Image 1 (cartoon, rainbow, N blue to C red):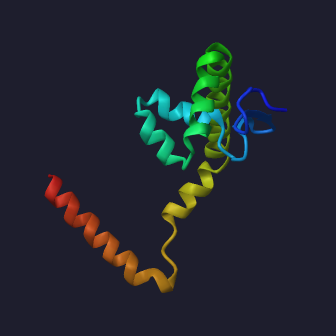
Image 2 (tube, rainbow, N blue to C red):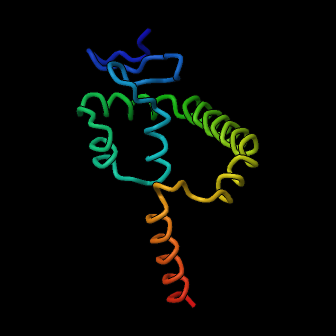
Length: 125
C-alpha cells in the first residue's frame, strides 16, 4: 500500500517498516545518515537511489517527521536490545574463543599477528 502520491516512486509500509518502493531500503537507514549530518547527495549515492526515489523519501520524512522519528527511535532501541541479547548470550563463548590456541593451519598467521601486536605496543609506549 503506497503511502505517497508520487507517480511511480512511493514509500511503502512493509514488514521491515517504511521502505522506498522497489528497493529494500528503509527510511530508517536514510535517517541514520541524516542524523549523522551527511549531505543529501552523499546519501543518495550511498544507496544508489534515483533523484525521484530520494526526493520521495526526503519528502515523506519531512511531511511525517514526528511519526518517522518516533519509529526510527523504536528501531534503534530494538536493535540495541537485540545486540545486547546476543552479546550477553555469547559472552562465555567469545571468551573461550579468545583463549583457545589457533588451529594448526593458522599458526604462521597467528605468530605474525602476535609479532605485529608486540611491535605496535612497543611503538605506542
